[in-house]
Image (cartoon, rainbow, N blue to C red; front, side, top):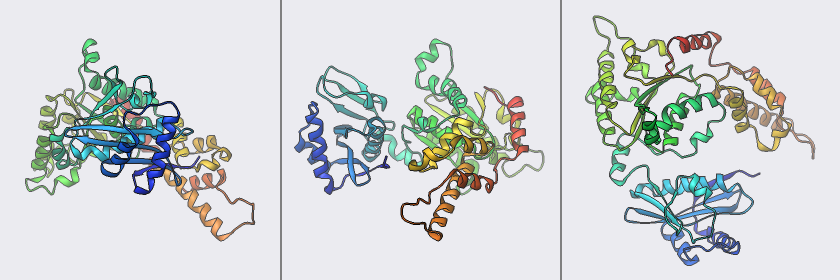
Length: 428
């Protein structure tokens, strides 16, 4: 199947939009908005389309009135994975309209018409008998400038599903973080206190940032990444810059705040004379205590060197959980390989062999091996063209050869230390 992608509407798309609208109505649906209204919104308001090669296969069209956004047309062509394409269209349209400061994005359907599964799966809720669906926007108008100021952003809603494999880690994060924060009524019923701060630790390249982003996506909260290396440029110094950032974040209604490589500002404090970062570590400890008093937000810190962290940093009362994130399991390695193996040759590639041979590699290692194999095959095809009808495609051998040339990021020693840290440091 050809690759699909989302882009903004072009005037040349009008004929295809008309065809798609006619296909929807011929199928028995009764759009609330007329074709002329849809065309007008395509040209004057906001519209995105899904493309498969050069063919338009879906569209989402929206308009805004004050703080209310409306979807005036949303459809995908029959024969394509409507849930996947539809989710990507809705995400793209929301990002296109987000700068308007909308408080809600809504859609109307006639009673007894379209199936609503795709919309409901993408966060819309059925409200009335008219089948009125609406979704709260993650960021309100008054927060847009503030979110931009702290470098925050809204992530696509599909990141959680995109984390393939790693089911044990995903289940743990779902139970410990996502559910208590997204369903506080349920947490209260069971006496669970929603977490305020968690630490992710593990070898380099194991996906700690990916998990942090996925949690924000799953919660549908803004994601704000704090970079320790950039704080040093603050006029108030690193400690002052850190406090100013957290003060600004406190004005957001919801936020997932992420600090990667936190050991840069929270390493072991030593005696006299104090280290240059000791004041920053002290400030961060104070900020975490203050942060924990605010609801509707979550601090996620990540480190490759959990042993380097100051003892006071991991003390009970600061981080609710200290969660290990290790190397990808077999299922995750298989999913990573499939992401980089061209669709056309997947049936001929021995995926099981690649999964087995890539044991101990990080996602980045596997990506490197896959891309190296592709490049080597392309070079071979250019240098040694074969006759008509003879394919010079990638093969399992190409991938295995690339794996042989790939140096593992995580050494056996580091992997062993990580297992020891799970026993002595992890708090689940």
